[in-house]
Amino acid sequence: MYHFIINPKSSSGKGIRYWRMVQQELDKREIPYTAAFTRYEKHATEIAKEICSKFTGIKNIIIVGGDGTVNEAINGITNYKEVLLGYIPSGSSNDLARSLKISRNPVKALESILTPIRFQYLDHGRMEFPDSNIAPRKFACSSGIGYDANVCYEVSTSPLKKSLTVLVQANLYILQLRLNSCLQ
Image (cartoon, rainbow, N blue to C red; front, top):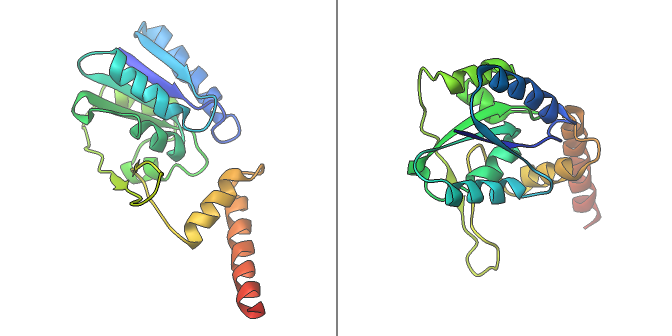
């Protein structure tokens, strides 16, 4: 059984388009699966937790989304020894997929999950916030503070979340830093 966590809004709707292609392939091959769609921030975390608690034995959790959806899902996995994580990238940057050499073609990515030639262990880090009410967070791709964290935040909250937005937000932040330091 394959358990899919789909972010339908990843990369302006690419997630749902890719899911339809994947679903068609699964149905054609009569492969059993469950599918859950994220509806809000950190929903993938909740879905992954539910899959881990509801099903016994090895769980095949497949993410259709971007780096953020993968990040949310790994924060919901409770026992990594019982989870095989697959990834069908449909985000805007797909940095994790690029580093793991996962095809950007959803059908090819699915094929590599269904008939794996190799498995890779996925290292992840864990950030803790002592003396804070913020819960610890795991990350698989990258983590940052300061400048890059601010740019990521601005991009993720921007209604124009596109690759050009990253460049624009980064330049605006640099300009803001320069202005603030000049005014002080």
